[in-house]
Length: 158
Image 1 (cartoon, rainbow, N blue to C red):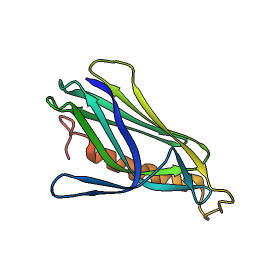
Image 2 (tube, one colour):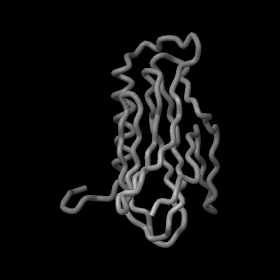
Image 3 (cartoon, rainbow, N blue to C red):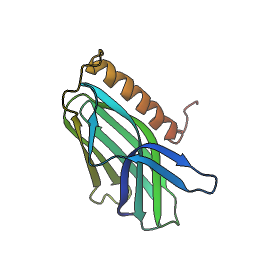
Image 4 (tube, rainbow, N blue to C red):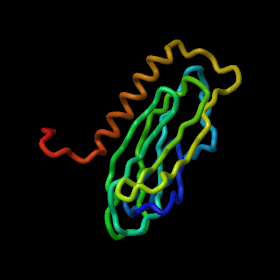
């Protein structure tokens, strides 16, 4: 099903127009740097995949230090590309890497991964809260967003 990642971006703002056009504003480079230590960013993750048109289940994995989320979705049959756009609260508590991996669950091919480096600006001040507090808030927010995107499970009340 998945032939490759056409694009993967992190941006500060996403605007959807009535005609379906999406503007990606404040696009980030390959490094996401925090102004404070610890710190974080409220971002939009936008991924476009090239697919074979057969449709099927895929898993999106987001991994960074103290940040791990999974999103299961189904690509519809027919289109030759599919897009995922959703907000994340990314905690930056240490230097490292944010990796976003897409797994084709139906065909179990090699996963596709894109990465961004996580860093701090020079002389980034202490913001007055702990890394654990930041991690809890960011993971709670992103977990709620991802849960809202998951299809209902059979037998579960909503």
